[in-house]
Length: 212
Picture 1 (cartoon, rainbow, N blue to C red):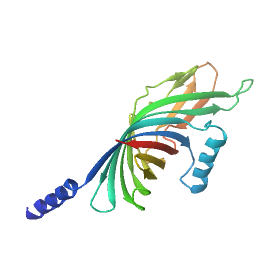
Picture 2: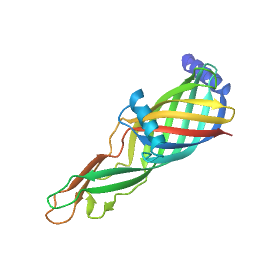
Picture 3: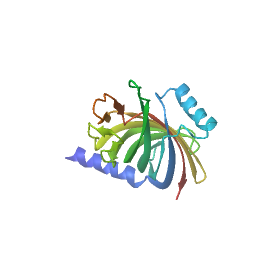
Picture 4: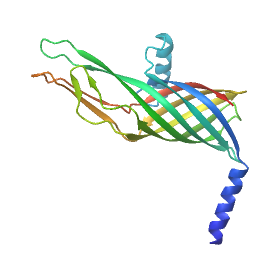
């Protein structure tokens, strides 16, 4: 019992002395295949060169940064995320390729743990992100969804941010622990066209924020 009380008192002391700051953040989402520097650099460069044509969506939300007495911090966040997946179906006989753009929305809740590297000028963080799907099952033209969308999926984020006065610049990679596999079938009689894609794709996130 004494050990439990000691641990509880120590935890209370740490959080009682912690400094908490709030910020509003907005990000653009760019699809990428992996978290390698080459892929992230290519995704960012393409976004600039193509005037953002490869940007697949955005999110906006609130972030709380809890600075602990050490160089560590905890950063829970909540975002409304809107993005799209563009999928092209291969040609059938005597038919043109079909491209569908599936729009999705969800609520993302990252819980990140980080450390300061150069004071407020540079910090790094990592942690899980839970996503609640807001988009209902849909039909696109003659394509009918066969596999129901998952209501909840889990991913992870790793990234860095820089605080300059009240402004925050962020860059992070998001991968997936669980998939959200979608499947659409062409309902036209005699057609064998179908679409399969993972709605929890890897993304590169670039954003700005402002501390209250």
